[in-house]
Image (cartoon, rainbow, N blue to C red; front, top):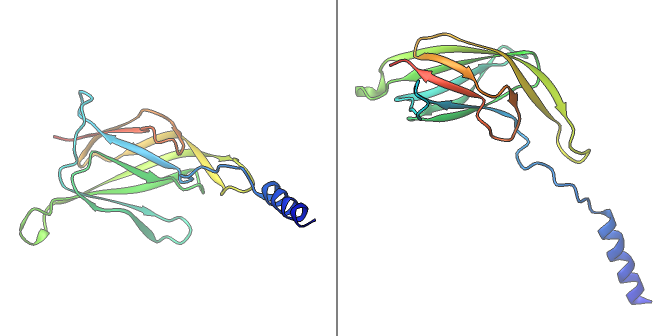
Length: 164
C-alpha cells in the first residue's frame, strides 16, 4: 500500500509539471551592424550612447551608455506605438578631461507590432516589422534595412555606414 501511494504521488507530480520550453530570450531587439560601403566590418571609433524617449511619460531611458569602439549593437523595440525615436550619440572622450566632440543623430523607426504566442506559461512577446527608417546624418552616412522582421532570433536588421 505504501509503494502504491509513492507511485501515485510520483505519477501526479510528473503529469502536473509542464513540458513547455519558453524562449530563453523573450526580449525582441533590432540588431545593427556597422559596416563600410564595401560590406566590411567597421567600428564606431569613439564612445557611443543610445537614448530613447518613452512615450508614456515623456522621460528618456539610456539604453547604451558610452560603449567603446563598437562594431554592432542591439536596441530593444517597444511594443506600444507604431514609431520609436532613438538618439544616437558619439562622444570623443580621448581629450584631456574627456570633454571632446559630442555629435548626435536621430533615428526614427516606423514599425508594425505583431503579438507572438508561445504558450500560456510563457511571457508575452511582440515581433515587429520595420516599415520605414529615417536617420539624420551628422556622423552616420546611411542606414539600410537588411531584414525587416525584428524577432528574438538575433539576425542583423540594419546596416550602419559611418561618415569618413
